[in-house]
Length: 250
Image (tube, rainbow, N blue to C red; front, side, top):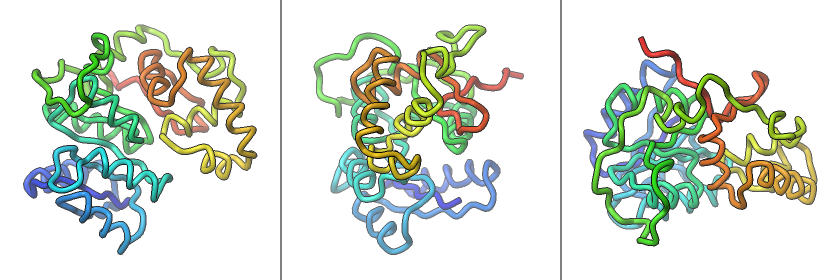
């Protein structure tokens, strides 16, 4: 697996590389200190299997970097790692195309659990995205408090919302094909790429997308990600589940 680490602090990049090493083999880590360097690395080496990017970068902002990377390589998953983890910042990252968000304030255990989930094609969101109403303030506003504690690989708010059961696409009235579209939509893949992967026409993808958004009672992909997290949505074993229940704590 090829992982691109984008952060202006060399020590943090090296620390994440050490955390990743026992989680996946073989592992090749690339490093960049800015969005511009990240684009250069991708241009020279091709798409990575995963990009972990900070928001507070010199030059172009991390949000701009997420948008640019997703536009140029829509198949490449991008996950934000940031010290700002307020709800507006998290939602802005998801709006830009990120498929997950890991607060830098997380403990090493939570960060390892989040990385495991993301490497399994899951989506990790911090508890802050499930708490309080979205404020009208700017998306780049700095966080004023650390994220609430969460068990490894799964935000506390998500886990508590699930209880003893989980929800599967069929419980929402979705067909197998609609579930496949939802699975790819949650990963931030655009309609054209979803159609290519599932061998569907663009109009069919749009129709299925409308159906899954209605089933979740949302209107955007970002809202769908949050709703799926709140429901603890699970997919069949044949698909890579975007959200999973964490293993029991020891």
